[in-house]
Image (cartoon, rainbow, N blue to C red; front, side):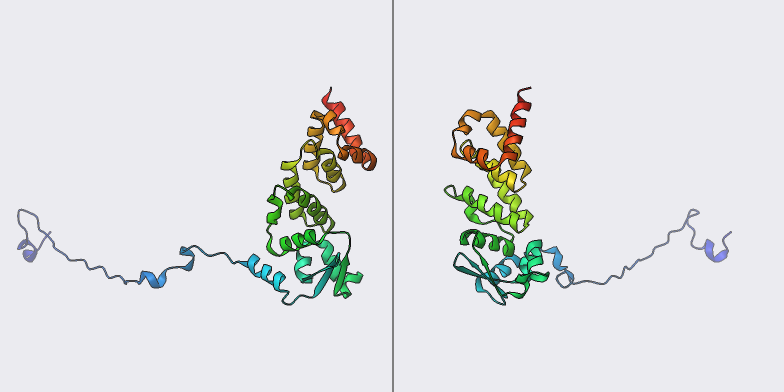
Length: 228
């Protein structure tokens, strides 16, 4: 029920209420509140920084003499990649007390390539050279296996996997057997089995027979299995 005052505002039993709404909000400066991650975060460039350390020898605490050529390096960086270097430098081995280590059974170019990978995590560009990339991959695989640098070993195995042929299959099979490369070994067994007569004419096959009986046994079993 409306009283006398309320009835004064009625028109045809209805009344209209007008109101104004004001919304207050704080204006923000978009440029001041933009998050840094809204833009592309640049690469840390760590591999370049570590590569510079290797090139300049800054803070190096060990020197390798590789067939008469010297290489300065940092024990802690080598040990971070290789459990073998970890044991040598920070375990109970003679090398942990030595600042100069001689290596006479590895070529300087191979050792340099291995060091470059350890510092930069980049495979050497020389692996892609058509004239000597396969040879470097073979030697670098041996070095990576020796120092238990598994990632580098897999990179070299993959390179050899793509490049193995009739002329190199037997030698590569021996390498795969000696350094526990199962994928590469499987590829060689397949290739040799399919091209046995041609492979038997290669020097690598003669060396395989003479020096790697375990691989020969596996090859004979594989060929026998494919003929069933």
